[in-house]
Length: 269
Image (cartoon, rainbow, N blue to C red; front, side):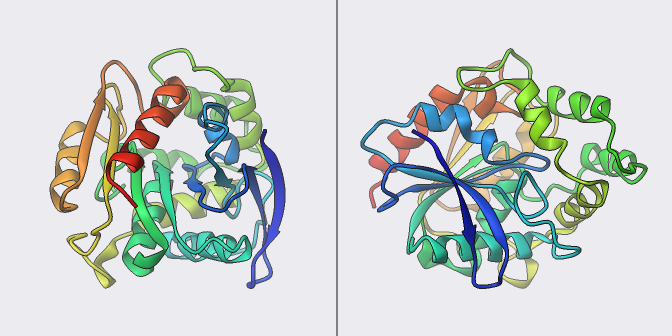
């Protein structure tokens, strides 16, 4: 059963957090750009009864706080740690999708004791590529109310197949419609600007077990980026889903959860 809570951090911001289980040793899930906790609904529904998880809706997104500023990846990382503090979660496996993978990497670099495992779905070393830069040009022209047609095209364009159990494109679009135009712009600029250079430009200090999941129909982050990321994080594993797009956990949520749990169990605490 998914229980959507309101969690207030020490910084005074309120966040949505979809919780399953007792949260004694949960999997923490960080969604991508424009999404919300619902991005992981399919994976949460596939979670076995004896496991627990919490999917956080990040600032500016969904029904979480929408402050005027603070949309860098570093800000998002601090927010996630604040939610974990408020929920009394000292350490957890962290699963990220797309933008959420950079937040997960930031947490693993700056607060390594808080992360037991990393699962990076549709990730890269940097999001600063031609596709994302082109999206930023389009986003820069947005004004409120953000056109639903734009959101529909953006979200639908990340998938190569019909969505899997527990996922509905209309709901994904509804959640994304909760972002004002300024958050579309600021969050994307924060994503494009992110470099871990002030902490570890080579990601070499990430030493927790790491799994990279990638669909070979992903048109946003290509195979060369997966290979590069896998090489930079020592001991990481790369698993490729054939015929699956950027929205891997939407298209194959059961498989993504199964592979995540198997990896966490196999690679130990």
